[in-house]
Image: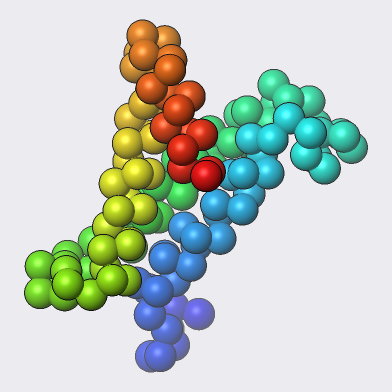
Length: 117
């Protein structure tokens, strides 16, 4: 896969980050399919946190491929959208750190809730 001359790592990491969003939302819902079948909510939170870390990491790697084009093409809407989504993801990640989450739970909660909406 990586030896293919036509495969773009930048697009690949972007696809991984976007695809993980679905699993993040499913793992955060209290009445999802997984919990009705075999996984308890407490266990699902562990998967949700892991997927969140992986998603933010792949989004940051994806954006690193576009740093040289960011300032030149910032007037292009797709770059604005990607940059805004990355900033939201990093903000959610920072608010989910245990110290921040315990001190400012409302910020943590509403940042998660606003991103879903």
